[in-house]
Image (tube, rainbow, N blue to C red):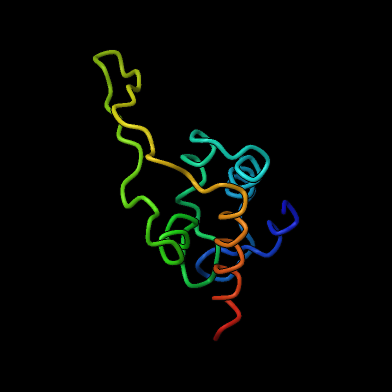
Length: 106
């Protein structure tokens, strides 16, 4: 599934920047809460759809709120609440197919 990175675009239809590609590649290689947190807000198609928005669009049970954090007095991040769940490999494949097909629907 890592080869789909070349098919993702930003909201202007341009190829993703290396930093966004890296965040998505990390998620696809190791889907867990921390890699999902890093990648969920990446825009993945010319319609401006993020990975998380694409998930919500096809799965009515997808969480509508994510990780909640606070900073302690020393600016250390304290996770108050983690994601209820993240998409598994099969759901990620469906999300990606949906987002890429939305680009070709125009």
